[in-house]
Length: 44
Image (cartoon, rainbow, N blue to C red; front, side):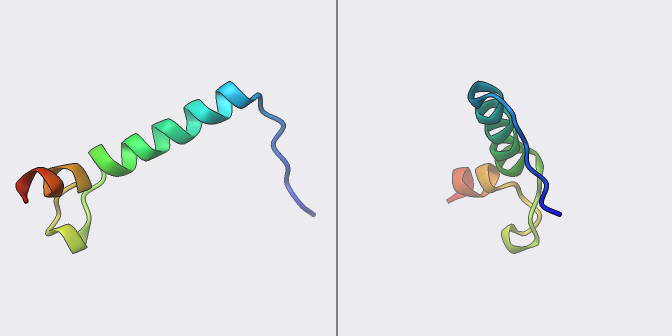
């Protein structure tokens, strides 16, 4: 069975933007010495 999501485009864009923000701002990564991607970029 395949799940489909019938969401309106503006809502889908908001969900994706929030996921990208969380990934870059809130989630530290081992490969970045436990810094977020944005913290690592500012450090360089």
